[in-house]
Image 1: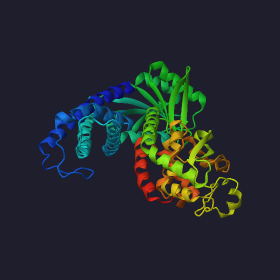
Image 2 (image 1 turned 45 degrees about the vertical axis):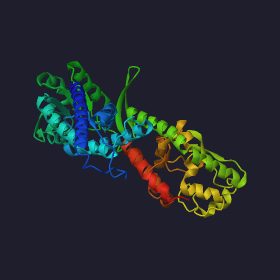
Image 3 (image 1 turned 180 degrees about the vertical axis):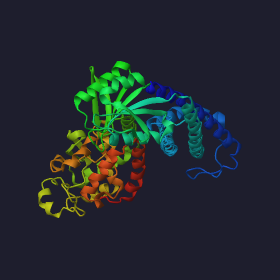
Image 4 (image 1 turned 60 degrees about the vertical axis):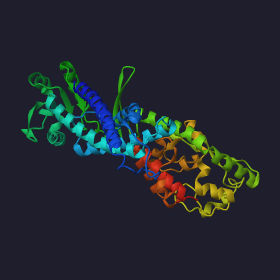
Length: 477
């Protein structure tokens, strides 16, 4: 029932947000139309007087703006349960969601230019105003939902020391609409109350407590319950139709997140330490394809010139094809423009003593195997552009940990293996943090930090940060 309430509130919030975004867009367009003589600047410097922006010329963009805004808000989990999002977290999520939506809108307008030109400053102004409008609307809707929603009665099962933190958390957040009716403790745990909540009995008396109290959900805390007790509590809840929940952190995992799924009738509780939001990952793949195709089309003159330069330099192969380890160590053949002499691999052993990088990777600032053309390709990162083909094939992503050599993976420490749990990419945190100036262990920790905090917004941020790094050649060799 609680999930149904949260879902209905979520869909109502989506409808309200759609109306807020659409009306805000029209309002800002009206203001832009009225004040265009005072609004003579643009995000990118251009003519002193901009072409007029009218509601009639921009209203068609609403059909792109509203879906993009709602999609991004949904990806930032703003519809999970609108009653339980703190104001500070609400504002942060809305700002992040609007920033992603604004970037996606610019991408759509770049790939599919509208017949009527628009103004970047107008779109940016609308985006900023929409943050305030959405925040105000959500605060109002959240307060109204909390007043209308019935209180959800929860019974806590666990020892005093284990139940107290959960009870304290619930009592500190009255906006959640949860009321702890009492606590049921194990045998031998004789306490009168837990954080001011009455102890209603022992686990063996759970059936009587459920018959006596109006309970919608039973929450089991602690990590030391035996299988028979867990089954007993679950059976008693099933008999009366109460929801049975348990602390998903009973294994003491610090990173992994719990998820429940049905597998042919088997209820499977899974713990994952990698991103598992199917919708967000699908969007990430869609962005890879769109950016990959667009990148090949836009960069085709540069790719052709680079290929010709490599071929004319020494007559050798244009591409360097090397086996790398992809997702979960799956091997694939990664493409690069050849930047070294033809027999570079054979000369590797003789240079091993001059490695300037800690760990199993080899990095050398003045590597004698690098050709003159190759040095320029590396400095500009053009040598990596053929990997767009690996992105389109699904072996890599635009953003992700760099793909290691199988020999490097064989020498990984166990904690470093988790960086293989996400598809490798063209750029990641390491690329924008100094690249070769970062030691190996720090590199690995940066990649794991990316995996632990992954979001579509983080990908966008890293893409934007990569541009100046590539243009400046910082950390490249």
